[in-house]
Amino acid sequence: MNRKRLVLFLMLICTIFTSGCWDKKELNEMAIVSAVGLDRNKEGKLVGTFQIINPSNVAGALQGGGGTNPPISIYRATGDNVLELDSIASTKISRDMYFAHANLIVIGEELAKEDGINDFFDAFERSPEFRATTRIVIARGVKAKDIVETLTAIDKVSAEKIIKTIETTEKIQGKNISINLQEVIKNLLSTGKEPIISGFTVKGNTGKEAKMDNTMSSDIEANPTAAGIGVFKDGKLIDWLDGDKALGSMWVLDRIENTNLDMDWEGKKGAITYQVIRQKTNVRAKLVNGKPKISIKVRAEGDIREANVPLNLTDMHVLKDLEKKFAKDLKKEMEGAIVRAQKNKTDIFGFGEIMHESHPKEWKKIEKTWDDVTFPKLEVDVQVETFIRRTGLRNKPFLSNFKKRDQ
Image (cartoon, rainbow, N blue to C red; front, side):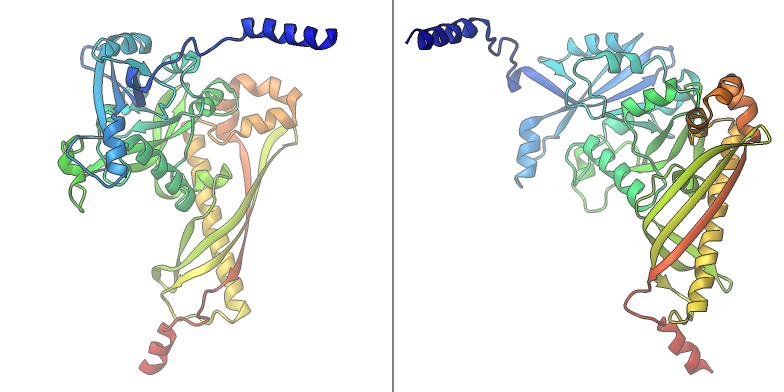
């Protein structure tokens, strides 16, 4: 009996030290920030654009009610640093700004080129509310505010639309990269890898992106669109990668999931489309006669998804020729991306990190001169193997029948 009383007494004592929800905040007391944009004005001041979610308008739209009220509100502030922007913007809002759901940071292109991004990320990383998984994009050819204030039709909160677009284009096209705050800061601190960040722009009738009319038509007048990959050196934007250069870089980085490769055949451009279903890129560093060398091996498997020239896809010799041609084209894309990075003197592939892991003693000797001396002259050997696993429901393109009829 005494034992039961002792246990009960201890339980009562524990309740004294149990804290309740002393710091709770109600939803109607918070301004939920979904995106932050940073620009620099003509006076040299930092301009912050904050995208605030209107919960009732978003909920109504998702339930099919529609309405004429926008799902987001935009507040702007001007100051000398990120924390000051937060303080000034808070004076314009009747609620406390809440950043735990902010999943997008947009940096203006001019700001990224002239000032760089090193000075801005400390405030975001240090904040107990900001997530390390918040995505980063560069506003290409437009201001960051133009991206943040855009109203979109399908995804009611445009920050979500931008994130989903980058994830989709990385997965399907391989010409963009989805990267978060933690990854960017890690690459900024590394002496063996420079960060790359996807670009985003507004295409169409710019000036319409912030109006509700933009979401009330099947033909969107101003549409935020993924636009290449930004290359950084010492924290500043120095170049853009588009098309084959962007795709080649993503292959080297082993960031490809599913993408289509178009190949010219018999003088016809883009005649055959090869869809990659799985791939693996292995990168190794070694020393040859005391000099660092990088070896890249790629193995890709995929299907023939389109053939606009007469081909006998049942012939193993034809398939082998196609595999060799795809491998040759892919190798050319990857080598082109590497040469571009070497001209920029920016190791965006992390070859330095791999060298550091494989040969730490040698790395100490070349670490300080890696980007400007060693990396631009680095020998890189690229080997590619491609395999065709399936040719679709038709072995011979129907164009073969036309050719026979013409004969």
